[in-house]
Structure formats: C-alpha cells, structure tokens
Image (cartoon, rainbow, N blue to C red):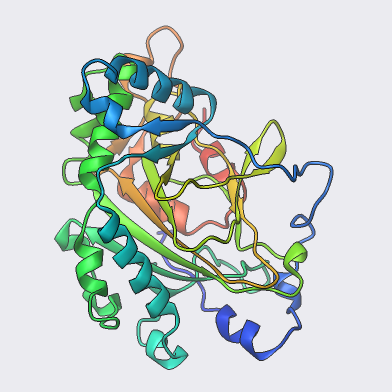
Length: 344
C-alpha cells in the first residue's frame, strides 16, 4: 500500500478552550499528570555558546562541549547564535498575532487530504486515538520549490517575509561541527543538506482547566537532522525524558533549544541519539513556540554513514528520505517507536 502524508481533521482546540471548561474525553491522557517518573525540578541541559566557535582560542573547547552535549543529552541551549534579536522578536510578534486571528481566517489555511502543510494538527491517523491539546501551523519554507504558498498566512502582513528567513546557515554550521566531532569530513553530512528542507511548526497550546490530564504534544523524537526551537512567550511546557523520568526544560532568554533528530542518530549509527520529549500545558496561560526542522534533500538516502559502521556493523536500515518522511507522518506519535522500526 502506498503511504501518503496527511492528518485527519480534528476540532480546533483554541475554540474548544474558549467555549467550555469541559475537556472532551479524546484529550484525556492517563500518562500526562505527575507520577513516579516525573521530576518537578527543571534540568540544566548543556549550554553552547555559538560565538566561541568563531574564536580560534575557544572553538576547540566549545566543540568538545557540543560533542558531549550531543552524545550524552541530545539536547542543548544555543546562545549568542548571531540571529539578530529584532528578527526573533518580530517573528514572535507575528506568531502571536496569527493565532489571535478569527478562527474563520485561520481555517482558510486548513490542511487538505494528503498534505501535512497548513493549519490544523499532525499525526492523527485514526478516529479514536487520543489527541494533543494544541493547534498547529506547519509549513515547508526552504527551498522555494518545497513551499505551498496557499497555506502561508497573509495576515499579519509581515508573516510571509518572516517565513522566508532561514536558519539554514546556523544549522549548517552546527552540522559541520557535529560531523567534525565524529571525525567525519563535514561534506559527508552537509552534502545531504545543501538543498535540504527547512520546515517550521508554529505551535499554539491553549490553557486547559485540567492541564494535568492532557498533553500539548505527545512524547516523541524528531525525525530530522536537528531541530531549533524558539519559545515565543514565558510559559514553560517542554519536557525531556532522561533516565526514565520527565524533566522540564527552562529556556534561557533569546536562546534556541536544539535537539538531535532521528536522521542524525541514523547517520551517526547511534553515536548521537535523538531524545524523547513532550509538551505539557498550563491551567491559566497559553503557550506558543516555533520549531524549525532541518532535513536532507528529498531524495537523499538515509542510513548509517560507512565511516561510522566499520567494526560495529550498521544498526539501522537505509531508506530514501521521501519514503522515510511519508512513513513518519503517517504514523501515530509514540515515543521512539518510529525509529525502532528503522533498527536492525
């Protein structure tokens, strides 16, 4: 059977939250609340200072820190990353204004059958599965042929311009350093990414009166090379799974939260691992975030790099990237179960 990407239509959660304090049964998640595997205290994930890569006197030490962060955590905060503060603040403003638009305006950008781009939700593959307490706008933004402008908002007026901005240069530089840390020629990784795909997921998590019984984003690992996440407002919600427990992540002001994706885990033959994470919601306040995903070009082959297979053998299968993503988007999120299907 040929797989197609897409997600079943579901109710708008922002409208549900505004209309009633009752939470429909499909959103109630037994695994959401505090339990023995949940830690209330935040976790200090590694902090990487991008400016130190630009200084010959500090670049080696910072590269070593990045290597340990990728190897031991799969998550890190990136500070002094060269993306201008005014660009970040304008993007945050545009996202807040978009989600404040009337529902009918946003529904003009609704997803269509067979396409994950647009306004709605992702990973809904059956009519009885549990749902996330969130609304999503998902867009392919780079390269230009991957864009579907019918899903790009025209309001606020500067939203499209913001979407055309790219974090690709920053992602490229991080990937180069990560490749060198694995004793690879950087071209081995960056060649797959030269015309790679940048996608953005704009997330809106409404407040929920039963916040301890729902999830804003089911536990999962990302399917890309690396993800850069920007928190739009000061409401916390991101949690990572470490040693079997869930820990809140406390973003530093202006920092990107960066995580290793499944594809990089596969390319590195497991040297760097993607990490399960999820989002919880707040009882009183909305939460907004922007996740930018960086993936190889559509027809790249995804498999362990031969340089990292010697001696240990390949731990993952090799597949076409397009087929890989079709399988990912046609699956229900369930921890790292998708990546487990790629293992030998």
